[in-house]
Image (cartoon, rainbow, N blue to C red):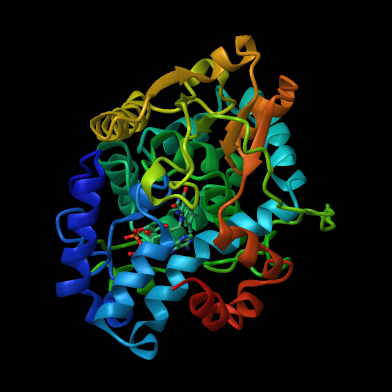
Length: 381
Ligand SMILES: Cc1cc2nc3c(=O)[nH]c(=O)nc-3n(C[C@H](O)[C@H](O)[C@H](O)COP(=O)(O)OP(=O)(O)OC[C@H]3O[C@@H](n4cnc5c(N)ncnc54)[C@H](O)[C@@H]3O)c2cc1C
């Protein structure tokens, strides 16, 4: 498995997947054949999560190949990301509570042998140890493996989901505050209260093509209990209408300026904001930081070639930059936390049209959101 940090590579991957493998996606997508056989899924998440390619672009291309009915499952999966993002935007306290919980748990578990065995892949569960090593080596796991991993972590190893979510964020190239936090909450049974995801031996054997044997798991756990409830905040995702501002900030979730809704505006300076470990609550593996750096560098080369004036800055530089900026909205997560905690009032956000339109449908569960997918697709594709 190879994730070259460039848009050209991502586009090739997308085209190839649509031409050769999309047709069988709904039938084969749940199979995890191992890191060297990933043709049954797109492996696009490291690019979509960084905005190197957009959901709109992916759906658009897939619909040029097959009808909506033939493509429905794939389109639903692609839109899960927007759904999770919107869900978290409406309840940002879920993220801040997660970060607070994590701080306490990290202290309590720092020398816990059970935890250390898990993150070093030294448990007595062979498949789990394998996924630890796969995650560290390839910085990616199949969706089904993420579900099994999280379930084993929580219900067989009896570790807090928050520490598992941190471990994923540290190593995944596609680490995303919404998809990751809410994915772990969903497995634990706190996202849909009382409904947990339970990994079982037969399911792992079947969907890994019998790559693992003798998988002894707790197959009858009770869901994690968290009595906190989160009401929906008053929201308005309205773009700043400040055409006099000529400086644009781009954060790690929207890296392709040319694919953005704002590519026709003229900016004097475009700053790509790099957020390193000094300013993150969750410290990332050096490989993940390098991946982000390279994606940014490649975008800068592309834009410089088109005579756009752009460069990379460190997020800490923002504190000393007193001029006003427009910023492609970074979403709930580490970058927004930095802006808010440093009270940076000179940044005015621009939201993607597809988010503005779709997030209002994220008040309830995904099954409800699904009803609006044809509407979303009709509006944007
Ligand atoms: C515990 C857990 C943690 C996760 N953490 C992350 C994370 O940090 N970042 C992340 O991007 N995804 C996360 N996911 C979602 C999902 O596993 C990945 O997006 C998916 O495996 C990416 O592989 P792919 O590109 O081959 O997906 P494909 O099956 O080819 O799907 C196409 C695209 O649809 C989107 N997508 C598919 N499934 C999901 C999903 N469940 N949630 C959100 N978007 C989805 C992705 O953008 C993906 O690239 C997590 C899932 C779980 C269960």
